[in-house]
Image (cartoon, rainbow, N blue to C red; front, side, top):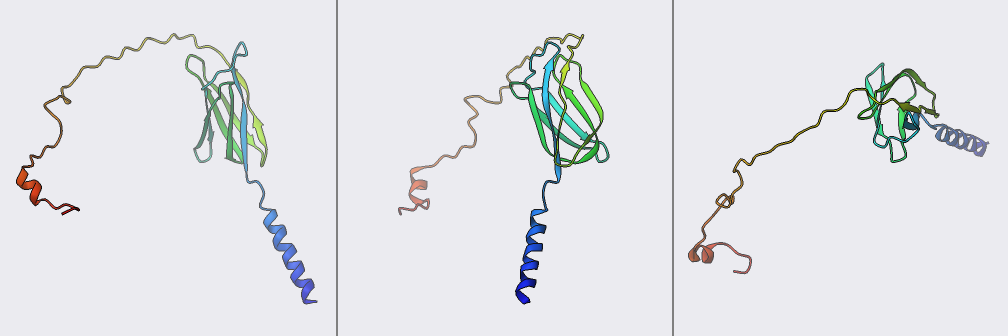
Amino acid sequence: MKKIYVGLIAFLVSAMAFSQGVTTSSIGGKITDNTGEPLPGATVVAVYVPTGAKYGAATDFDGYYRISNMRSGGPYRITISYVGFNDYVQENVTLTLGQSTTISTGLAESATALDEVVVTATGTGVFSSSKTGTETNVSQRDIQTLPSASR
């Protein structure tokens, strides 16, 4: 009788250990331009609206992205952006426990042109041959009296 109880308890404990499964969700997809060309380096940000928690990723060379370990449920606000293109925003996205939600889109080119950026710099003279850092003059007498591992 005692063996049956031990066996039953062992079975229940092992069943509870295996029931700890997946507790998160993920999103993924492909980001392209209007012609279907992938946009490598596009930024994907998912904001869990109730708490403001942010999850993010950048697309790879082929335009694919994946954000894992996201809290299940929602609502989420998904924002996809890329330089020179209009942002794409999708509201009220709800994630299902243990499932991957696919959000793929094509971004439209922005009508605004980017201005050039000119960077100029001048030296401040902080670094020069006369300023070499801390300096200590050591005489022959100092060398003979300084502690050393071999003396």
